[in-house]
Image (cartoon, rainbow, N blue to C red):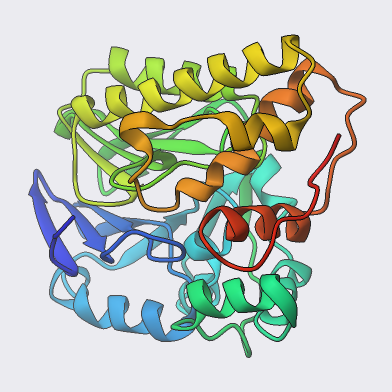
Length: 318
């Protein structure tokens, strides 16, 4: 899927900073301008990428300085550049659930992954090679919220809507009503496979239903090109399919690994990051059986790597 890196003017004083190709770590940011001020939506995966973005958006922010930053969730590719905004006295805002996970341990865990041996290290170096995690200081929010809240950005209203746990425990949408525009964070992946680290998948489907019911025409996903409701509906179909296929196998008494191996993704088989099916099936199983062992993320990453052609398979759970 081809689209242009950099600043995109979406009209009505709203912008997106896009990072093709939208795969692991290549995330999007947003910018909402008001009278003499602007709001940033998410930073990027490392300091170099975030500095590049700050330089690239300067033609807009010179007239509309960034006064606040909203993190849509806690994943590093949306928060690891936060310290550069904090240095500018920008107020950082996130859901309370996201804030709990924006830690130095999260930074150091990713840095360690790139140094591991075996399948996990090989996979981590493959997907994270372009990013530099050394030297990042985790910087969480100055203000947290739960549920919904409204911000004033230079005289215009921006609404924050918590819809997690879904992709992560603290997912939030950033809605600009007067522009009929939504920054969806990783509630929407376009051109790649979503991954339910938190779930339940039912709640994620509910979040997509909420977007489909909103009065919006332009949607900036966490990964992928600027989109609209058709892309939301398409991702919803994938999640509904995975939920149904995993549930059927659970009810038939299949193990998680056997379920993952037996699911034919059909029209989704060629989608980038298709190996994320491993975590998505595991998430469904965990919801159906809360007593199911919960493997560490590294174990799940190894199963994803194997599905994508790295190394040899090992048991994930059950």
